[in-house]
Length: 215
Image 1 (cartoon, rainbow, N blue to C red):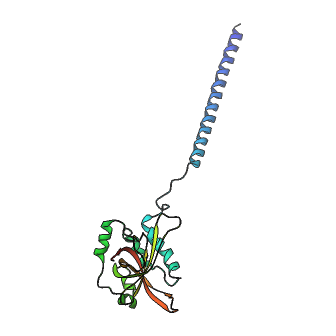
Image 2 (cartoon, rainbow, N blue to C red; image 1 turned 90 degrees about the horizontal axis):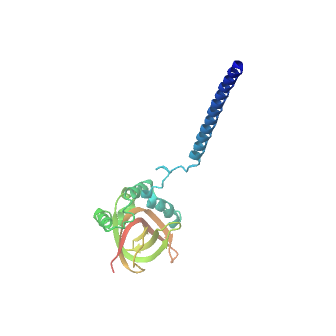
Image 3 (tube, rainbow, N blue to C red; image 1 turned 180 degrees about the vertical axis):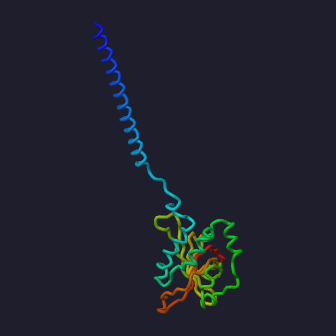
């Protein structure tokens, strides 16, 4: 009888250890599965965009100009690195939407720069704000593809017969052909195009900041 009880106790002890071992193995498996599931979840989570991947909106109009200028001028003019940097640096002025920015542009105007100086060599004046007035020969306004922005393209000629092309990334208001206007902008360089008389018209191209109708 004593032997039987001793055997029974040994069997009970062995069974107890087996139960503990199975429990430990089950816990390890659940932990491993949980860790694996967490890892898979982390891998599936979308990666947030970094600042480097986010579009720099301060460069938007400089980038527009870089793309638009060669097309508009039939590849006779490209946006210089100096002009790109200047437009980028003063992104609230090209174009100027707010009244405070329009006033700032007018205050920045360099009245010492003439069109004759630009015709001679425009390079020293890439980082200047200049202003000219004249009559609108032609004007186009259109929405930019894949953008909520508007682009206005103007050809203006003054009383001396000098021609200006203005690239303005905003609406031109109530300005129409033959209206007298004044514009403010940064010179981008010279260009030319064939006119209706069969000759060539030489123009100075500007990144427009603002334009106003005089009468």
